[in-house]
Image (cartoon, rainbow, N blue to C red; front, side, top):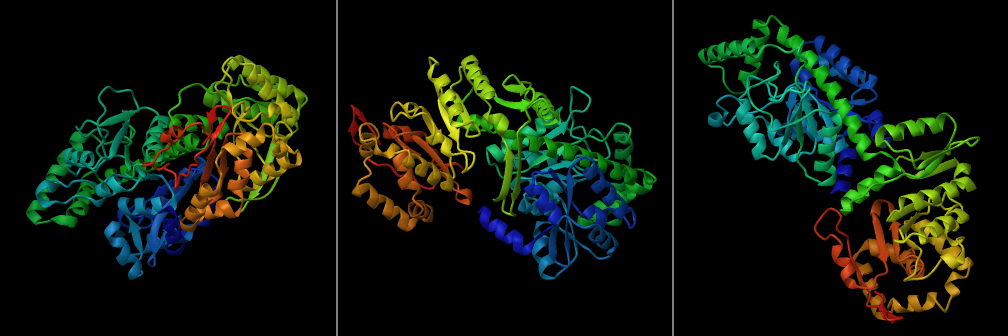
Length: 603
């Protein structure tokens, strides 16, 4: 599904180079609508406001992505000349979900509504979107069925909309009921610690309708969005309501009196349907002597500031270093426990900067050794447009120092962990020391080794041979190479003649049951499954089978194809925990019927 979306995006939609680069580099991006430019304000107020909002987002370290249609082509991210072109146009289509096809076919210019912007944002991979006020159920909407497409889009597109609440001219209680029925999360920012948190009514801080949920930090709402859309994979959006600042908001009694008078006048004039909202907004602007228009601009700026804070916090959760990745893995696997990041930095600017960031985020730098006279490790890489490595250089001398090995051993002894994840930036002697430290623990922790790079992965084979025990006494529980790294690891083991051990290694290999029957099963699956065929053609499976006696879990990373786990087990029941109905379900599972070795059946 995701591949087909990407092919569609590249052909039909133009994502600006700046947005493409920002998404690739993990820079927070905030989407913006364009009907506020094409239909919300007259020229030149509209272009001035658009520039101010974009500037506000940029000044705070994020990238704005204004969405629009120009001559029928959807754009995510506009240049300044495109913004000005759109702001000057007289006849511009208002583009919601239903209008996309006709706008493209007839090559029209279009300003995107909340619904239209959500669609383009989602296709581009942008999760946070800032706007002014939300559409909703119109007054008497339960009779006329006049319900904004913004609400239905929130129910089916996983983009978080940050706004100042539904417009006060709408039926806000029914709007909230509709969103609840559609399964849309609605949360309101509690900016002053009040006990009763109401959904704001655009122009006012309150609407008389209690908010379903409230939150008091941007990190909290980012966590809600992350768990809903990333962890659980739900396809609905979220509505984040930000009350306008007290000094900017208008009195609800004052606005409601104006709205009530405007509705009476509209009924007398016979103003109905889609003409009613513009009529009411014009009447409000007139009766407030332009104060509502000025507030509208300020609300948009306030919402953009809130959105960029959420986007930053969301990125912090998703992309926050190796220790955070381990936390996410553990949470998804259902494991519970604490975590400690163990490493070393130099007594230099880079080292102090790293310590400061980790301390601010995790409040624990006890696992990091500061080494005087040493330089903090540095790594620079050049990647292609697909994120694949082209060139890299590194200075990891501090990681190869004997003092780090002693530090790591002491940390293992002190923490008594259940798992130890280590990479090959340590020398073979360092990996030796890690294994020795783990072997001294009463409950021996399982060691997972990340090869790091092809030049360093041979350090696994360089471990002292007496520590490279075979199953069931393996010291290395898992390795996580790429397919190329796996080949190099296999070659380094062969050069050390570790596959010539007929006393210990061969009996375990032989017991796996990799016989003609199992090979026939692999060939039959390869005929139907291109991933399986690639695994056989590249030798990944054959090499993994020979390495299994030394490391009973081999997780091979296959780039865009995902990954494959080759596992040695004593019971097929071990595979019952493999998910079969979730986003993490395997493409295929294949088991062999092993044979007994030393009283244990291997499979």
